[in-house]
Image (tube, rainbow, N blue to C red; front, side, top):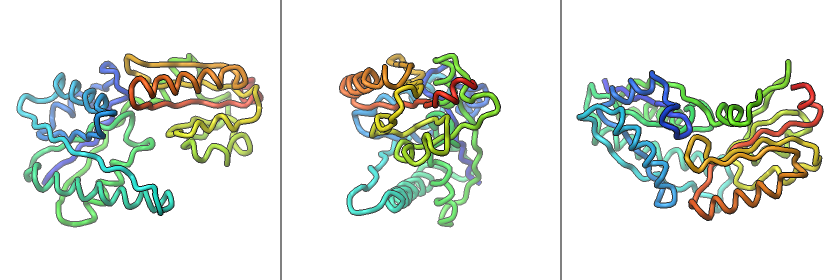
Length: 256
């Protein structure tokens, strides 16, 4: 039977690969490399550099284009469902065309596959389709959340306190009403700008693990404009941005 490895590769720094991930990359007969256009070519290049360093000599690289998610005329959940179905069809074709029975295929997933990544869900769709049989193994990786805390030299949680992880589009629903410490990912709209309390603490980072890494921290009233400016300049320079931040209410930060 075919075997698929879903390998968390951390946030881009080659030293953040686990020993388990390094061995898994070396075990793969075929490594599938997603491409998202020229503006995000650097993400594919990081994967290729890891494969060149740790992949088996005979491993085959198969690039595939990731379609864009439909946003016009559909709701968010419906758009994501249609997008995942389209990617699942692509994966099914990749396995049938490039992965023979008994071979090991691999996907190198940014960060950790369990945190705001859909590779596992998409593979479940492919398997449920019934046209190609395979086993899946998932290997964890270092998350941007871990690296954010390390770069700012902070614990994520206050003493005895919970932490909520949310996409930016849900921030206004929960902070600070029901959560006093929130890690925000996938925020394309700079949702922190709607937080009213200027004493809220923010710990922000972009391109964590990569050479162009940026970090800013402080009271929101003092640094929010600096984050907006840094974010806009970085996006203009690189053509893309991946960022993450932790927000803490004053009461939460005093208990940290």
